[in-house]
Length: 304
Image (cartoon, rainbow, N blue to C red; front, side, top):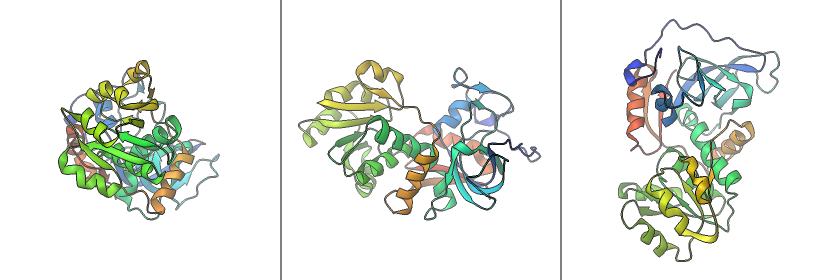
């Protein structure tokens, strides 16, 4: 894209130059790229105050693919290695909606062998968000009862499985048609909307020990009243959570955390639900669907 705007600013560039590979970079031949809400927010200019943006911009922060070559300072990977990455640099310019992706080595991990390319591409950003929120910000253990708002979405479905793998009791909010899906992931479902607080209290009269907000709005208002006196909570949506006694979580690339997610996936304790795949040429349609916010699981671009 050469400017901010709606989906139509995305154009397929068949003659894009091969990205340069610096000393600490890895050139990845992409097989698939995950589509995340941040992608359309970047496209609309919503993150312009946070990231330096250098046009033309190739969108995308999630990738799964094969190492083509490595920079001279890279010892972690070799050509032919299968990798996944949350390829976020400190500026927005060259992303993962591309056949070739130059990725800082600090953003990459090894692809879980159990996952398909599409599944693997849907894991990094959303998986890291859930993992870092639950294991680092909230330190969830098997003694916790965890409430996850918007539990059937991309981040939510990972959060349910990660908390469940920790041995915690998990309660997840979702629309009724996703309740069976949440049960399959290991959560006790509750419906959104009026009376949500009462429905949660019926399941946990003493309160939940941990809550994770993935939707904002009303969830931010009612969550403090659903916690035990020593309960802890976090939001990935609204930084004002800190004014209410919670923590704000902004995901960061971390190869060790990617390795932990890959281990959970290969052990069969973490599955990736792919809602829909699109070819790279239909990235605009993929972002439109993502922006609607009603998909179960991940949207993925298939590149090869």
